[in-house]
Image (cartoon, rainbow, N blue to C red; front, side):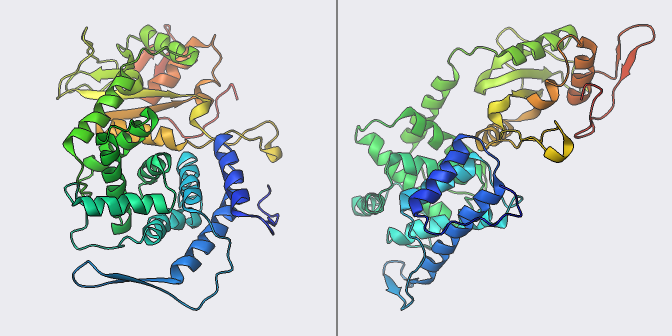
Length: 399
């Protein structure tokens, strides 16, 4: 839809809003005006709901009273599971305040709304629900999630989404995350199997939260180990390189850059630099694929179309397409690798694919500048490629 068009959603139900948003997420559609309008409607409803609910907190952190005002709610009512789905859509498409402050406000208010519906405190002096709490308090948590119909899928989505969007600093978000990990731990220890998809979402969230010195969560050690083992098992599976990845690896081989393909953590190309090296061709490679603590680790990620929003034709520029945005799962992968000490270099398909397969020297020039592999590459007596820092969005002669 054109930005100048007025979007009319008169008579839409909450189901309509959610289905359209999910369709955009599944289709990787970068429809910001449409999504902004949807989230404004939902945000307006949530603000009115929070205005009508006054949570009072006394000094001993035990007694809470909910008082509704006389204001009549006229906005569309969104179910809690619908809010979790919309939060997942936001994380999936990585909708942040750089695109609209509406998205930022929505991710901020959701934890408070869910806690208020569960009749759980928004604030607590000890700032955590400890995993060693009484069975009564754990039952209160489980009942709260059941009451608002947030199952294991919705809870895992909330953890994953708040982590992708980096919306885990508020007391409300921390309280909600702690509650989810506590109920997930209890479910696991009650011999109720946790789906691997949920375990992986919880681990990605927990790993990054645990790496943040400003976030304190109390998670059972056995459950922590269970999530880690599930993730490690998933990442140890056999992986097959794509055609683009193979072409990238072959070019690096031709340039004399030693590297590992399909390394740990699903790294497309892993490069280990020698200590004190300045250029990326000064690499070391062991048979076991390991690297020392003093060595610099570079993860080269070839991001294909599935890592981005779909490209759209820019009509005013003829066949030219817009630059797609990285999706939430791709952004999260970068964060996970950086937290493990990797320097991440992205090779997006829309840059690499512009160079024809037969233009081997151009591919080498591209990687030389993208990865800073060599000061100079000598193609012939007169053809020398001198390193230059890449210029963003610069067109090549193949465009």
